[in-house]
Amino acid sequence: MLHFLLAALASSTLEARRPGTPDVKVTWHDSLVDHFSFSDARTFKQRVLVHDGFWKPGGPILFYCGNEASVELYVNATGWMWERAEAFGALLVWAEHRYYGKTQPFGTASGANASTLRWLTLEQALADYATLIHALKVERGAPASTKVIALGGSYGGMLAAWLRMHYPA
Image (cartoon, rainbow, N blue to C red; front, top):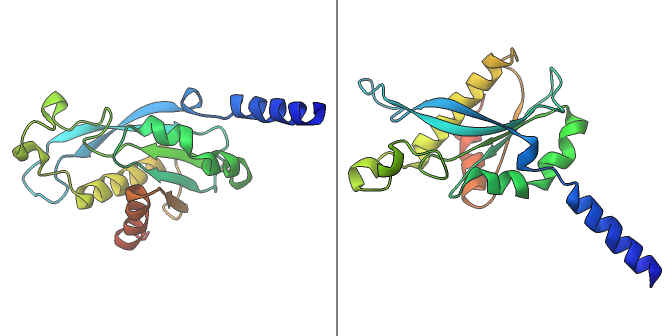
């Protein structure tokens, strides 16, 4: 019985130490409202959470493609990223999907009508992620060849696969 209690205590202690939102830095990326327009230069602030405590030059970027919720949910639920980051020397990045959480292209009016929702597409979201990844590499002085491993679950997993297909480099 004592062995069972000690194992349960050890397990709860590990859970209490599990990294999450207190361990990340919140940054904001200027993203285009419409990546595919030559005449629309409007931008919005895209929320990005980053943990660089394990990152070493030459290491990969583990990039979580946020989906239909606030990005904190994914920071606190992606154990694999936290578990493998140190061994990989990886930079951890969670990008919030446009129109979710605090990433509201038109502020509180983002979901108000069809005219503001027309940019809520997977193509626009993928372009957000591609430009964000490029900006992260430039900001950190990482070579363009820095490996990026896109991750996600459900819709975010599909975004990760589509990101690799549409923006392979």
